[in-house]
Length: 153
Length: 93
Image (cartoon, rainbow over all chains, first blue to last red; front, side):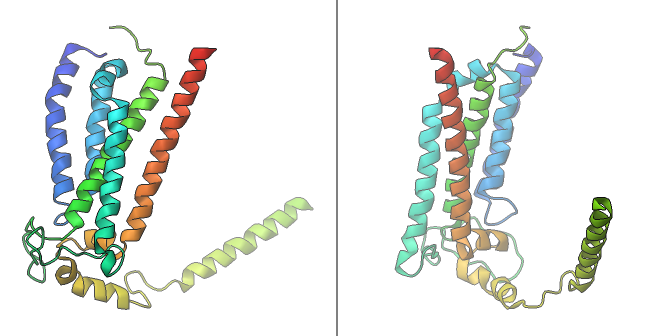
């Protein structure tokens, strides 16, 4: 557990880091980035909390069981989205042209529209969920395994 | 004797590698570019995504991404399994 200044700043900063990571995930089909990258950004924020607070302290709010469930559901959503297009081929993008994320952008470079991409934004979100939960669980498990013996004050 | 043999093998290997580097085609001009041209030309209307990299990652090569996600899942499972097992052993002993 670090000093009160570090803890307060980390508490304020985690919100912005989470928003930026969510932005990278949600705009994965328009701008560079995607589920893996945005998830890694959010896990960077979790590591910052882990440094600022104790691992025992963080364990109270991030439960290993919940993280496992979130990670598995992310993987399940990804595979279900892949199986949606099984009528044509595995991983067929069935949602292009439908009202859900189905708009087709103008050919060539241009400003992005978030309601495009078919299943790509949904898959990005599923992968992001998976990366955030999985890597958080790994980091937390490693921190707890190392004993959590930190210098008091 | 062994040292001389080692030097000879090293020189032959380095010469082979340098010869191989000289044969590489120039950067940015692939020999076969039909697939790249098709994806660059058609990805926007086929997948509706402005980001061609995302289109390749999640649509054209979705199976590869599934494997990537499986790797992550396996890694997380392995870490949690290992650390939990060792923790339990420490408690019982």
